[in-house]
Length: 350
Ligand code: SF4
Image (cartoon, rainbow, N blue to C red; front, side, top):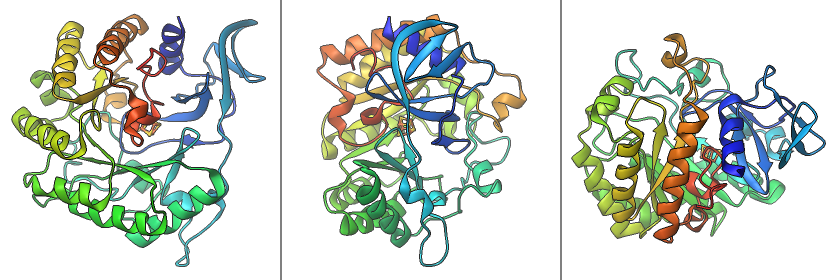
């Protein structure tokens, strides 16, 4: 029941103040950050939602839905600036209660309109000046140190827009991980990349000290991939499989994850079967409902979020498969599966 309710909130959104928000950026959602029943939750804020945040609860009218909900407070590190005058908030953001997230390169080689992922707004947040185009390792180290010291951040997620080189942006992440760990030894860091043409960079990322890695395919259905991700969808599945396998060898089983978006038009049972195959190879399928984010091509073209029943069906079955394989998101220490805020999998026990 908690899963059903959470999925409904994730699709419809909630009414109420959420001081920590993400408006645009890489990835699948625009949201406010809360702690719901003790778990990180990234939920769309929607003034027309029937679901209201009030007195630490979620209400539909006067009916209590049985979930506690505490908006994440604005972190203190947002009020600081680097020595060169850049607001920390433009360098990294708080996600959930304890995750520091950054997009180290805010541009993507695939951002031409006929190439970009239709759910992504990575360069819109740059245009809106919410962030800066490239974060230096030194800036990231400075912000991470402050976020850990002032706001209790316990893990960090570093993603990147795709660059033109054969490493697709991964080598820059190596330098960023090294710099952050010099400033904050022991901080759990997840890196997120496209499959690099040269897999040796995965060894470098592990050696730099990243504890987990996301290599996000978003869909296992080639037709869906071509339609929703014309640029990235041209990367053959075999490259993803090779990168996942090498990453599992280096980082370990259940330290590698991939997003699977629900609601792009794929067959739900094929999605679940694909998730089972990922679990077999040691990769955590982070199942997330598609939500049309303002500024995306998807919104311009009138895309609608999926039915709550479909998302619940897929989420509950994938959660069961993960439980049977003894793979829990929290065990990844850092990253989206460890945070869980964008998915209902944690609510469903995975
Ligand atoms: S799941 Fe990932 S993108 Fe979503 S709030 Fe958590 S860290 Fe951020």
